[in-house]
Length: 126
Image (tube, rainbow, N blue to C red):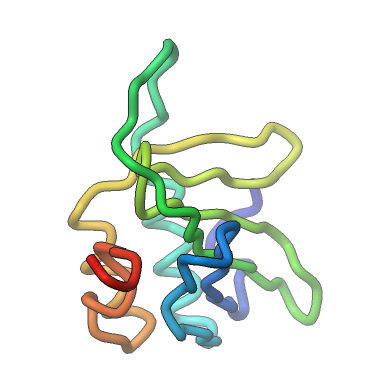
């Protein structure tokens, strides 16, 4: 993984694999400082444990983070606010980490959005 100091920006966008569960209307780009902070705190998350798990309901919404070094995409990460609440980080050796409540609060602050717009995600009607 490249060091956080190489990140010059980041794009955050919500998507959904389930048409019946539209994602939150969040599509944000941030500059160097927040990008480096988000990247560092994402890499600092604990590794996802090995084994088999029965995770809570997953409503199909994920958040895609694209970290840039200059004008090129350097690293991507996919955050899952439901189910096993994990993040998958691209790279020569893809990694999977565990998300926690503190991460969501810090992420929302760095993005400049209310935490309630990104976490917890509940589908319409619930």
